[in-house]
Structure formats: C-alpha cells, structure tokens
Image 1 (cartoon, rainbow, N blue to C red):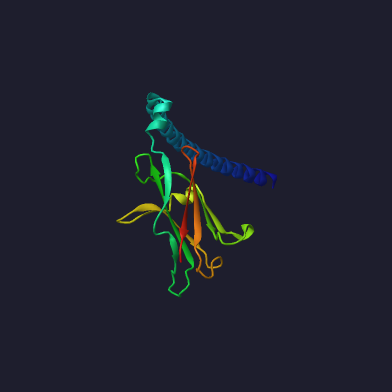
Image 2 (image 1 turned 90 degrees about the vertical axis):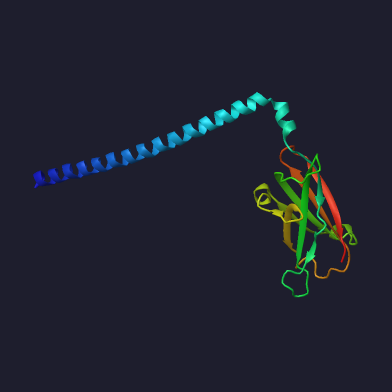
Length: 189
C-alpha cells in the first residue's frame, strides 16, 4: 500500500511541477511583453525630452496659447427642452479667448453660478455647478457659426418661474497658467 501511495505522490508532484513550469513560462512571456512596451515608451519619452530641452523653458511657455479672457456666449439662456411650457434647462456657452482674440480649447476647470440679485444676500445664489477637467474636454461644442464649451444644467427645481432677470457667473481656471478668469451675464426673461 505504501508503495502505491508513494508512487501516487510522486506522480502528483510531477504534475504540479509541470503546472508550475507552465505558469512560470506564461509569466515570463507576459513580463517580456511588458518590458518591450516599457522600452518603447522610454524611447518615445527620451525623444520628447530631447525636443523640449532644445527649446528652453521660457521659450516653451511663451509659445503656448494662453487664455487672456473668457466670454459668455450670446445664446446662454433658459430653454424648454421638452416643450411643456417650462424652461427647465440652463444652457451656458463659454469661450476661452487667447491673446490673438481667437477662441481656443483650453484645459481647466469651470465653476458656474446662477444668481437672483433681487433676493437677500443669503438667498441670492440659486445654484452652483463645477465642471472638472476630464468632463470639460468632452463639452467642446462647434457649430457652423461658433465654437465654445457648452454646459447644460437642470434648473427645474431651482427656477420655477422665470419672470425676473437672473445672473450667470462663470469662473474658468486655466490649468496651463493657474489663472482664473471670471465673466457674468444677465439673462432677461
């Protein structure tokens, strides 16, 4: 009996050793593939460093388009998106403008506030929304006439009746320079 049991253990050890060798070979292949990917990435980054080093730090920053101001688009307003007679959406159009006066797609974060300046101080701000950089890059909007960031906010619970002028305030923080640009617009009923 012990002879048979001993042979059975030796066979199991050989199977488990074969399985271990197979797993180690698979891991080795995977690691070699990752190493090749990393070497390619390292070469790409080295070329990039060489190009950027040749430019010099001051020259690089001066050559980039930077935001000089922001503009709130003329079509910023409340809209009735479901044709039920209630304007439940606030659509805000924002254009970052560079030093040449061109609208540019700039990386950053946006803070939008809706104000009723006819109310008391504690009740004047009706709503506030923040758009982070990951979401912002997806909100670039172009038509035949204009390009801008387009933000749509549900204000159905905030503005029940749009009978008095309301103010939209936008703060755009540009991530290239860290500067914050603000603009506001009065929306009349």
